[in-house]
Length: 349
View 1 (cartoon, one colour):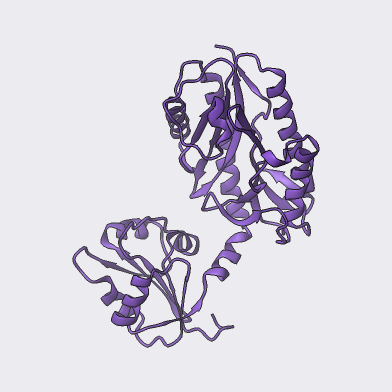
View 2 (cartoon, rainbow, N blue to C red):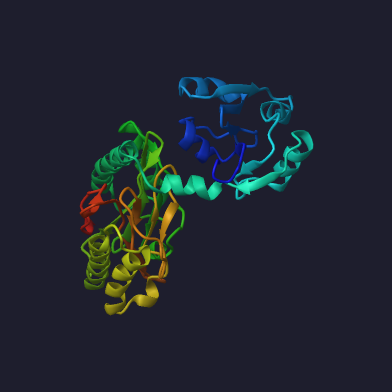
């Protein structure tokens, strides 16, 4: 803020507020804002989030507004005397910007969103610890759920079982679990359906646990009955690409180079056209954040970055295979935060 001669920052994205204050809340349609000034900070919250903020021990003045009151009246009071205001441009709606101008008499002068994202990109030791704990819980749940898979279960039933197992482990779901069987596994983001697992099906499980607000994200593969040679071949190819990408991770390497390491293996195996998404994405308070491991991306890896490695091959009408793990960049390369077995699990009942 000092570098850009800003006297006030008006931050409204809930995940940014969680990162800066430790207050995890989803105000839905209600206004929640963190106002930062050189002399301190004020958190403006809906009254329903007041106790939550107090329990978090936030190091900021706390102002709560009730339903029926005008939250911008509180914002105007808190921001009295501000001249050059920074906002998160990607989050501030036109309606909110107009209200800020009309009721608080302030016009956004600078986009501080990229600075917050840059801070979040490098994880502290405490953040890595929370991510490792989320990974540990996810690994334990992986082993439990895979052994409970049965022919005849629906994808929805398996998804509910994943959530129940994560809850039993004392965690919460990082995001809605993906369970895809048979030809559905060729659709990378298909939601669980009523389709029932049948012999010969590949089964793709993409899920994760959340610990302390930080998220894990893994994908493991199973097959109902003995796998056929093609299933074994594609799984082995994707696993080789996964391992090549992890081996490429180290400080100073670009995200595009890590993607290329995975993509080269799959292309050599004759399935380059069937790997049509990036090799991975950042992970932290959100399931998808910076950095992004896109083809040709030029972000340089630094110690403390955490992201997924998740190459995949998808064949319409047949199925798909994806293997995903979470890694943190350290001086010596990549350290895995998830470690459950990556073999093709055989469901024999």
